[in-house]
Image: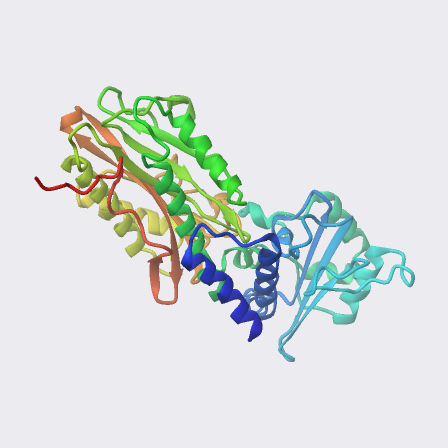
Length: 448
């Protein structure tokens, strides 16, 4: 109970001031408590659901399996030497063993099961643990379809199979489903924290797209990008990709998609009348955010954005709605994509959807709902057959093309927000943009 109270006291600091970031020591406490909760309360159910009663993860220092990396305690920044983790689920006893074939415990959650003085060979000790438990299925992290679940390197696989008795070879299976479920599934405590992470992300964007940072005619898009990067560093946070800021305005043609960097000017001076767009995310407490928002630079005497831009943003929100309304557990990403595109196009919109899982990694594990260059659906080796599962987070990333007669051109309304899909359906983690940010923020009008 004391641990829960302490966590919520930490989170209360967020509520008072979303820019107040936990100290390294406080972060470590939260990370380790959440990890213990996931091991003890989430992992058993995932192993039962995927039919794997023994899960073995093997990594060497600085070449970590992406799944194993998420299991390391807060004080471990990397694996050590060769790190071998073994999880054994005994469903009849409703127990789970968390063992390390290492000379020391892996934090408080995973206990060392190797005394090198008694058995000098690490592989032989691993085999002893397997033989003592005689599992039905041994899951290893290799996968063609999911890169995050393909972390077992060839050298370790070959050595493991050379040491494993032949009678166990038929029990080896891919742990890709288990690995993906571990990475994608969020606990209740993680979702409390996730709301705060997205709030911090929104606050940084709001500050970046304000007169505090932008002086029209002087500030460039590159200036804003580096301001955002520096802000993250100053707050003691990290980002998993370099921020981008771009402009759409009347005097230029619409170039290729935002991510076709060769067609996007690297640095432009921001001017009145510009529609600004950013792509930005942070990493904190082992979770990631990914957000795209829009701002309008007011012209002299303007106090609000033109109606045609306000309405264009509404079209972007409509595409979001078509997508999120079609997010149903059990559907694959391709099914959700094609249904959403069809309904949006039937409503007269010009959508593109490229939504990805979000969580322990920025481009995380789970079902893929389109890619910007694959609007007909993704191929099998991109996770096409993987279904949408409850208690997962997605970057609701998309755009819609809107014709602006006043500008004599098309623009793209590009949006991205963190969304949670749970037992009760979809919700945004911390809201979404429904109004353009204005630069500068309009001041209250004074009477005569």
